[in-house]
Length: 141
Image 1: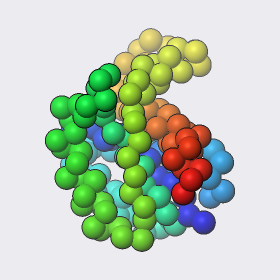
Image 2 (image 1 turned 90 degrees about the vertical axis):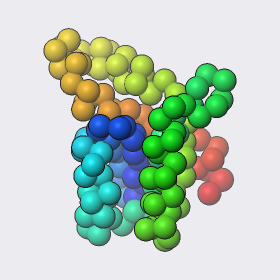
Image 3 (image 1 turned 45 degrees about the horizontal axis):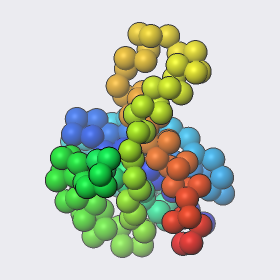
């Protein structure tokens, strides 16, 4: 059984998280410039067994895709073509940034450290992954 890789895609930076090999715990991996993301994924998947790639789907409160979906949809299609052995799934990412900020505050992170958007992106990816692993969608796979 391979790991699950989660992606919090951003136009400038992308947060990444991964499950442990037994798919029990989600952990933040890193944040990479989005321009380097596809090369990063190729290196990571070559070195690590990954069976599922979860991409956060930006959704508005009314359920419609948000404006950033226009950039994410072609990326998801490229992933599906490049990694046919992996399941590429979308998972709702509403409120992940808000939850990430709350987790940083609750964890005692200093105000200056909380301004680091790369940290927020990595925590958001971790939240997307944990939410996916807790979901009925994952349990039915």
